[in-house]
Structure formats: structure tokens, C-alpha cells
Length: 507
Image (tube, rainbow, N blue to C red; front, side, top):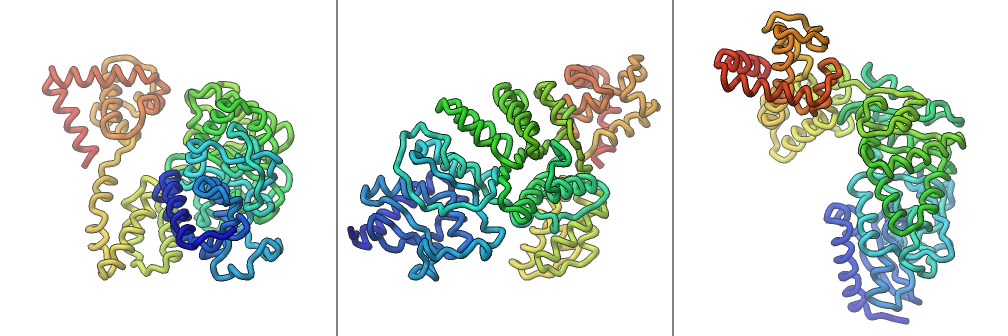
């Protein structure tokens, strides 16, 4: 069967338009825009890509959807083949490179197509295709058959076949390896534990639970573990995904009444990695399924690795039995960065970028930007980009000018500990009184002022603030905030004290 090239191009334009609507602008630009249509022969459309890595990625994540959309435009299209443009004439299924020549970054997820598996419903499939580009959700690792092998379509409710396994797959960030992780005192335990788990052929700590604040390296270590296991033993099945996507997959299995396939999918892996597990707090059904999945894997001596922003005991909205099991193995925390660690990160990042940045500029950034590593790297990217685009040398003065908004925001950041110390000094009480059970007015009133200022000057939640003041309930913090506001409205001297403290802390 032959199709004129003009007609083929028109069909491809429609297919690309629908794909763009489904996956979003970012994923479309990254993966689908570089594709070009080749020829059509015997029911098979050939799509050209610029690199072999992109070929494997498109085959794994988009080939089935492209075929489904194209079949809607032209029923004569039975399959889609993805080939590298530079070798399109010689590249056939029989000429795939042997496994020994495939780079580690090109090993793809397992694919064992059931006899009757087909495209998922358009709306659900669209979300599943788009998600990998949005949240870096999952990675499953093992040698596999070519992604373009076709099967007969099945009812749309079938969600347990190979296509669903592909939906879990997402790229691991190539920057996030052990080699690129800068180790310092705040993260040395977490790094050593992650390295031990990745190197071990037998399960050592189960689960490994990594926790720390935003932008301190939890996701970097999770990706590094997956990369290391992938390179060391490609036969091990590894799934890495966010807790949000785990919940999405579970809800979808409930919707299509196919929970058995869901259970088989997650309980047959060698390593299960769940990022940001705090997002299933309060989701009772998802917690129930995660609890049983966790137990099944541990019973089979399969490795489980979890990350969160708090320790297991501090995860609110999580069932007690689940919190207990999450703390079973090794719990490793990542503390806020020190000056030395921030400077080391900046120096490594500058080397990777090939940018010549004066040492005094790096030291200035390490001193000024203390919140998290993401902001630190973002600041470095900004000054390098400004220098390249404007053609201006990187100096301390130009750095302060380019980062004026970020530096101003960093200067305003205040910790609860600093507030407690300053308020205790101002009212002449002991720092320990801030978290004591004493209720005398001479102690309770300054404590309420400190809670009020913590609410006004930090991004901490009410429960977090309460914990800093002797594990008090969030309602106690709310009462303190209301009381201070009332007193400020009726007592000018008290209001002046509070305002003075605010200025001292902000300055």
C-alpha cells in the first residue's frame, strides 16, 4: 500500500498537533518536535529521529501512542518504526546493536506484551504520557524487546499489560549520579547509606529512608542509586516514581477494576523507590495499598527506598503502623548545608559548566544563599548566563546587580531558632523557656510573641512552629497569634516592642 508524501506529511502534522495537546509544550519540544516522517510501506510508517538515545526513548514512551493516533487518521497504518535519520537505510530490526554495545544510558524498561494489550483511553493515556516530562516520576530497568513490536488492540479497560509498565518509566536525570554528588558533613550519612544500598548484591537496610528539607539532595541520591544499580546489574528490575504517581496508578487500577495487575506490577520488582512519600499523607486507601506493597516486598527480601521531607515519626496524616514500618530499616537525614559544602557545590558546578568564576564571587554566593542547593545552582546559572548574553565579565559587583532580588529575599529569611533567641534576650528570659511547660505570664507572653513572629517571618506551617516550641499543638500557635494581634491593637507599648523585634530580625 502506498501513500503520497504530501498526504503522509498532512497526517503527521495532525498527529503531532494532538500529541502536543496531550503531553504539553515542554515535553513536546524536548522529545517530539525533532521527529520527521520518513516513508510508508506495507502498513508501517517510518519516523526519523536525530540520535540513537532519542530513538530508544521515543520507542519506549511514545511509539504506541503515535501508532494509535495515526491509525485514527489512516486505518492503513498498522505499526510505527522509529529509526535514526543518519542510518535509516541500513537500520532494521535485524540490525539492532548487540547488548554489549548499548550504553548504560540507553537500557530501557522491561516490556513483555500480553497477547491482548492496546492503547489506554485517550484522556488517561495523555496524562500518563505527559507525566514523565513533568515530575521525573519513574524508571524501570531491564533488557527488553524492541518497543515497536505490535500487538492486536484490546478493550480500553485493560490496564495491566506492558503498556502500563511503560507508563511508569521516566528518564533519570543524567546529572544526578554519585560522582556528581558533593559530600559534606550534613549529608555524609545519607550518601554512605545510599552508596551501600546501591553497591550491595543483598538487601542491607530495608527500607532505606532518606529525609531532609527542600533542595538538599534527596532526589539526587535516589536517582544516583537507580543509575548505579542499572549499570551494575541491568537484570534487576528497578521502579523509581513519585508518591503522587503511585497514588495515580492505584486510583486508575481501581477505576478500571484491575487492582490485581497493579499489585503484580509493583510487587514483582527487585527495587522499589518512592520519592516524596509525604504526599500520600491523609490518603487512606493509597496508604493501605502502599502498606501491603511494602510488606510484600520486604517479605520477599526486595529492596525498598523511600524519601520524604520529614522523618517517619514526624509524618502527619500517616497511619501509625506505616510510620512504624518506614522506620524499620535505616533512617538517614540530610541536614541544611554548611558554608564549606555550599562552596564545594558551587566549585563543582562551575567546573561542569566550564565557566571561569572568581573565587570571591563563589565565596560570596556560598555566604549569602543558604536556603537550599537548587537556589544556589540557580543563582550560579543566572550570573553565567548574564555574562554570556551581555558579554560582561563576572565580578562581585555584577553578581550583586544580577541577583539583587534573590539576595534581598535571602537577607529576609529568619529561622525560628533566631526568633526564639532574640525574643528571649529582649524579654530577659531563658532560651529554654521557649519550649518549657511553664505558664507564668512572664514566660508565656514572650513565647506567644515568638510564635507570632515565627508565623509572620518564616514559611513554616503552624504544626511545625508548634513542634519548635516544646511540641505544642497548632491550635496553641493560632491562639498565640490572635492574642498578640489583640494586644498590639490595645497596648501601644507592647505593639512597639513587637515591631522593634520584627525590625531587628528582618535587618
